[in-house]
Image (cartoon, rainbow, N blue to C red; front, top):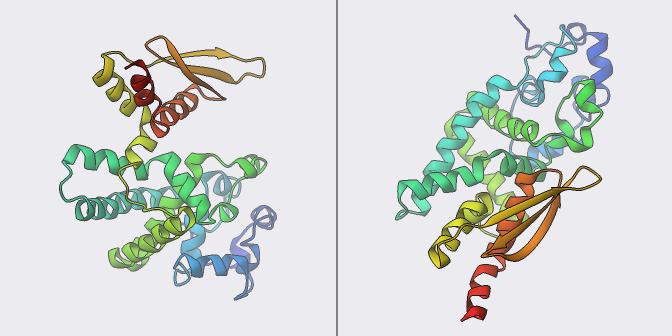
Length: 272
């Protein structure tokens, strides 16, 4: 069984070599109160968590796999707990704020703020990215850490809070993180517009069906650089194009743009 003691003798030289490339390295052997890591912990209300618990939450599987003597497990079990805790807290807030919404819309709204893309964006806003412990392979691409890794880290940190301090503290911490989001973007975190941001293709489909009984059409072609150029058509009329390395992302961006700028409604008015 792995120990939870952060003792130099319990960490292999290979692990120390990898860890030395991370901002958290000095915290193994010092208690610098002015370090960037500790400042970030204080801002996020995480400064009371034991350091082994925190590092557990930041340890990606690829890091732990590269050293059998690394004294902590990866963060997957914490992510498992955090996923459920996040669902519970967000569900409670949604029911409280939108007390007249039916269950179906509440479920969609919850999905809009606990999906991988949204959580990754949130984790980056909170400043978690520099502290994720990655193996050499992942570390080479540390400027482009996969969204799935950042989303899992977000949930793992919340899971660590829950297991260490319970539900009330988890609610307090998440409320602080929501406050940071609202301050950054100048908008309410719990907003019905999240439905369009999360699944704009479905919303656009609903509108086009109600207006003219037809579905949006997406046409794509592969460019020389390997990216996809996707175009959106409604009733045979082009509403624009988007280039991306993912057809799904391009289609989503096109649908969201059409909704945001009310391109469908504006086109209908011109025809009238």
